[in-house]
Length: 560
Image (cartoon, rainbow, N blue to C red; front, side, top):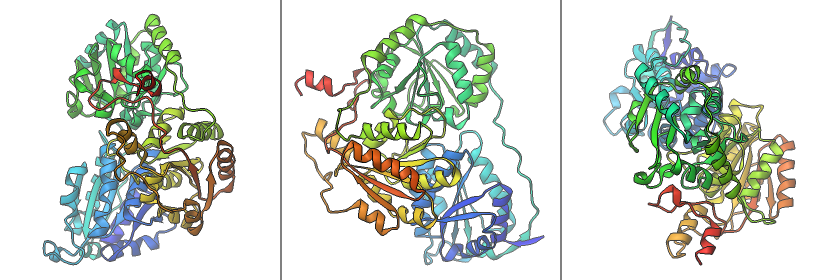
């Protein structure tokens, strides 16, 4: 049958099982929005306050559900406002399809009103992108975009459609999408080499990254860790792939990782890296990283092998598939002396914070207590992000959503809206610093408009906390442009947008505020007043090895 381009867009989204789109309309994309209006019972549209919020919401939806997130934007500034969200998804390998519309084909390249080469702009931050100038190619392009977004190493794909193409007509025939299955192609030689390394090791350590979450390999990872009898650490992106409550779990690795994990990885004889890319925030000084260990890396992306750290052996393949093969061929191993040493480190170097005061770590632990560890936790970027990673025990994948690779301030609230939309039965909490919250607080209006009951916790220290921490430790306490000493009242702001606003200045006030938020069934902003000089511990200084992690006690002993 003959359909217009805009009808084809909607029909193809329905083919792919899309039930929610986040976006913001404009002139170039009006035909698509007009068609979307006719299908509002099948596809829910969430009108965000800003296109960047739409991109982050699609990202959060994808992370929480495992599906492909979808966002819409119009041409020109509408499209460019998606760029930060697309880059965020790209750095963290999140499957998102962004659909933009442009000026008509005849107007392209003529500096027409609200024209922008969004395909050219986003080329470095997408897995692939398209500009569709022929309506006959539109349906197949959309279908390809979804396959690319979710296959192999996932990532964002952009489709730009000139306005006249959305009005042109072409034959359309519905196609049932193939059920996605990960590739089971794995080199037998690489598997054999991996098994030899694992069996020979006396002090193995497992490092789980975002690939362990994206591949759905949590069950296989758990079995693998128990069979190898090895301690487990993770990256920001790997949170929840292995239960944070398990005795073998030793906390996060890297700049703000636990001393146990940093010391253990520095002393192990085999580091088994599962779906992680050796970020500089994990390795510290790359030349000194795991210098006593052979490194076995398992990743779906061959380009990650030897990119940041030289490895001993690698296995290229889907992590769930590879771990399944290894588990079948591995016998139960016993590394009791090594495990005992790591457990001793856990006892000697526990995470701790100042008692009695209202602090970031306390907030996170109280959220954990009241949600019984079952919430989806979303964060912005900074000190609060690290505290959320350190003090909430994640036992399931897709329950910690954060911008790891790009470190996007302004990510969290939009992502929380996407997560809650995709997982309506979950408690969704966005933890933000006051600096980050200012960047996306307009999305509280979106939450109210669409009745999305997210809980927004603002860790308000009236400074840009993480930058101030660096200024305090490494820049002679010169607090250049990091003090937010203005009169913004987040409680009144929340109320003005139609949300509940509560202020907490003590532990008891926060306990009561969060307990109330859980019962209200509406968007809530809790403004938590904490000390401006609270710091994230432990820490690894820039350029140092992770084995040189230090904390407040170490500084006092050094007289600093």
